[in-house]
Length: 387
Ligand SMILES: [Zn+2]
Image (cartoon, rainbow, N blue to C red; front, side, top):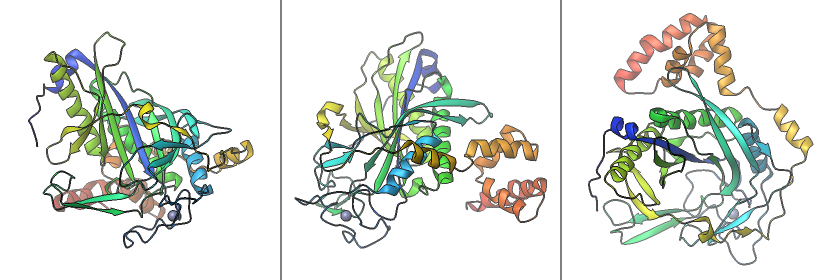
């Protein structure tokens, strides 16, 4: 069932309202085994072939924490300028859904492993915008449902559903921003730039390939509007599982226009989840959003607390690679180009290619001209990725 959504123009929406965003990004870690058991995380295996009593939630099975998962979480936390908890626990997030065999997700609630950080992101014109990070916490992925027999692949109209638990228990890090205020008309651009910078950081750390098209990284876009000059946040909508950079930007833009139309018409925004549709660039209503108390969180009794020693945290910090924004700023200086030139290189997906070409012996100017000129043009014309 699709109903048309009233929108106001983007300019009109921004003339009356200030957007406030919150971005929640899930990253699937590239560990060899799952977060709480020894099952393989290899993609593409026969359904339900990579499961055991722990990740199937069988009675009496006891989980054990994956040390590499914790180390990856700390790396991400440090790269995002977060404080690392001296002591934290896992919590059970209780909800009932067929793709979650235990009927709870092992997550973290009020004791995340990393908190209070920030990530500086660069906009198209080279300007820097600081996105404050609320927390980064450890949790596990769910299994995968496939709804069969319907036209849309959604549960409505399906005759039956298939469940694959190979993904259940794969480690996830959820990174949550503080409310992003003050971006104004650039809010959708900030959202896109943030997710891109975060993806670059995750890749540089080597903790995940962070391929959005493979679902290894997905973004929930929370958005609300408030009239100019007011402080109080409006009611937010949460557009779930947006899985490309372009879609993150489009989803934020669409929601700004939709909220403005509802509010401007005297209506109220329903706090709910929304689905984003790639084909139309629009969102449609999902389910009414649960509040935290609906999940009956409580500390996980089967896992010991995580208490990373300060020595270990400092050792991890000392081993962090050069982070992407620092690297780009260094290359901008070395190559003698502008910040917008670098943005164009980034947009074209040419940065690593240019660096590799220089490493192979070319001078910087020729390498840039080669990749950003003829090769970018022919890649664009033939619709293939530059690499
Ligand atoms: Zn398992």
